[in-house]
Structure formats: C-alpha cells, structure tokens
Image (tube, rainbow, N blue to C red; front, side, top):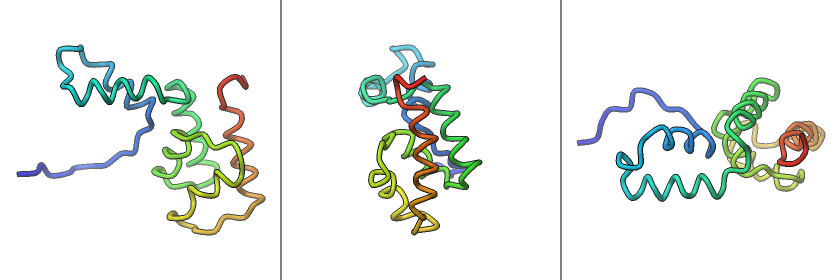
Length: 114
C-alpha cells in the first residue's frame, strides 16, 4: 500500500547528492548508490550555487520551482536552450528579452565564471 504524500519538494541534482551523502555506505541500497554516482558525475554546480540560483530564478522571475530545478540541473547556455524549459510551464510563451535576462543570471553561475 502506497504511503500518503504529505508534501512535495523539487530538488536539484546537487541537493539529491547531499541527501544521499548524509547516509553511510551501508545504509544505501544499490539504486541509491547508483543515484549517488550519477549525482557525482552530472551535477553542474555545487550545492550552495545550485540553491542560490534556484532561489534567484523563482524569486526574481517567478519561475515555477520545478522549472527552476530543471534549469539548474541542465544549466542552459543559450536562449534557444533556455526556451525549451518553458514549453510546458506557465506562462508558456516567454519574451526573448526576458529569456535573455534569465540567461544572464544563469551564466553568472556557470562553472569557471566566478
């Protein structure tokens, strides 16, 4: 029988990594170990930068949290790449000028730019 969902939070790959690293190796099952390995290989930002960027996207641009998490996970570097994240979100159509503003913020966080 499935457990009742009390709340739902969207977390980025670096946040998943932190949660998994808080457990000992013995506590992790094989799927959790694979997930940890994935987070180590594919996290594009460290935890603090990922959290800060997600918050900035949500607060400054009113981007849905789930969309902000996907942006943090993928770290798009062009307006065209960024536009794909808004296909299924509200609002569906985002002006190019706003996408350019969002991209400027994202590019501040790209590895090697600080």
